[in-house]
Length: 151
Image 1 (tube, helix red, strand yellow):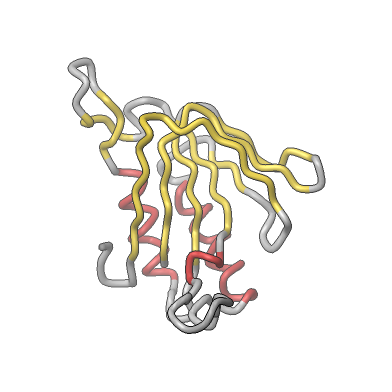
Image 2 (cartoon, helix red, strand yellow):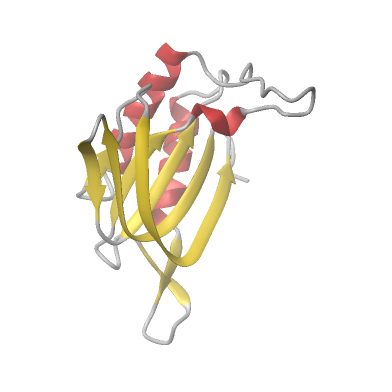
């Protein structure tokens, strides 16, 4: 599982001009699922993300979690995180999970995050989405993990 996490002041995703998810302060999560991923990998990633302390405290130190600031989550599926561009000029996506598995784990991950965060919005799996955000910081993290650990 791969994640690009951006701390945002606000974010929104639309499909065919219609908003499918919108948040204020929180995290925009671009989530990629690999073929070998499972529920344990999704659990670990959701737990890590929701407990990260990357919001500033009163002294300006990154010491507060999403829950501490009443933050929100916007989760967008992003199979292109598994692009392999080593050979040739056209990316290969062979390492990305098949659509059925990826959608199932995407939904599972989103539900798991709701155990920590009251407002979890999402895009539309497999759709042509437009994502708008106001990056706060900017503060962007790339996380990779499997069922055993997060890198």
